[in-house]
Amino acid sequence: MNAHAIPSSARTLARRAYHRLRRDIVHGQLAAGSKLKLEALVQQYEVGMSPLREALVRLVGDQLVKTEDQRGFWVAPLSLEELDDISRVRNLVETEALRLSIERGDEAWSERVRTAFDALSEVERDVVDRAPIPQQTVDDWEERNGLFHLALISACDSPWLIKLQDLLYHQAERYRRVSLSASRGRRFVHDEHQAIFDAAMERNALRACRLTQDHLMRTYDEVRKALAAIGERQG
Image (cartoon, rainbow, N blue to C red):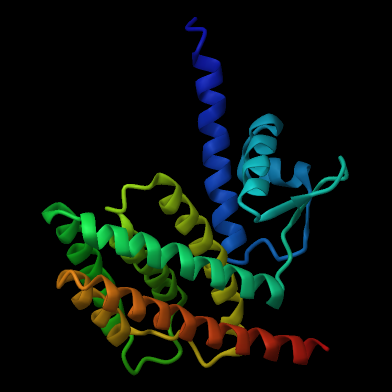
């Protein structure tokens, strides 16, 4: 037997469990602040205890799961203070990565951005004047919106900036999804995306970064208002 077969298989199972748990936490299917009961998760995700623990440790590193002195694991709670911090840091990371990407991007980068923007635009055009917006459409929008923002920074030549942007995007997505319960529906922002896309294609880094900053802050303001409304109802 290949000596590396078992470790490789275990890593694959842990990676699969990590992505499924991460998705379910971000989507709110595992509620913020809830205790993660390992025996139940083993059954639910059809994974062994060792790969499950490895996945949970990775999620602790992503700040999506908390653990305390061998007392177990919990889904990380949500707070307005954390939302403020996430939004501020994401703005710094994403605008710097975008600036570098526009300066360094080649034709392949331009094509990646164009392809991602076209895919996002299909969803945004599909929801004009539709209420309520179907959950599948919300999921499609989140996926394509994430790919658009990733494509924009993909030529920055900094793995750390890309990793940080991915982590912060999913943290922000978690808050956006929770805020939907207090809002009239998803805030689709095609005009803002169009303006960012145009500035990036024109290689106008200053304008693209300013538009991105405004775009992120408008989204942040709406999410914060929605979360505050939830807090008032629960209080």
